[in-house]
Image (cartoon, rainbow, N blue to C red; front, side, top):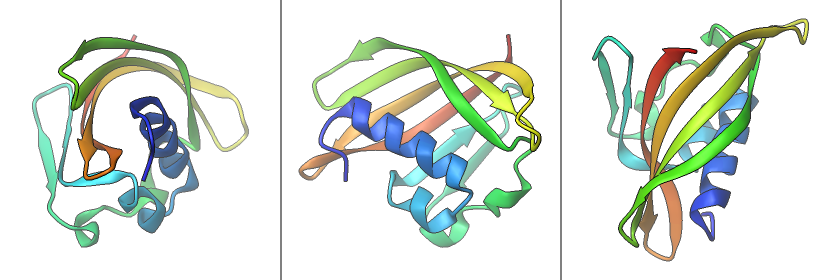
Amino acid sequence: MAATPLAAANAHMAAINSKQSGQLAETIAFPFMHMQPNGDKALWNTPADIPDMSRAPFSRSEILEMEILATSGDLVVYSLEFQRYDDNGDRGLLVQGLWGVYRVDDGWKVGWRQYLGPI
């Protein structure tokens, strides 16, 4: 478990890029919600609910910008800008999102993501 909210966000991105659902589960506070720009929501109650990460429409993502929008002490909401890359390492979409990172026991995990789409 990450010691800080920033470490939790970075560990979560590394887990997304790993394409390993087990590694991703370690960075998530369950139940976890992932929201799409059109309002569609995916709720993952357990690690078994995490979809096949190898089916993502990108090879990897890189965080370009991350800004704290709000914090309550036990919750930090980040606004993020990501660069997507394809399997050849070429740049794909530049996208934006919001992540909610909150304290769980003695550490921090990502509890929800809102994908806002391409910039």
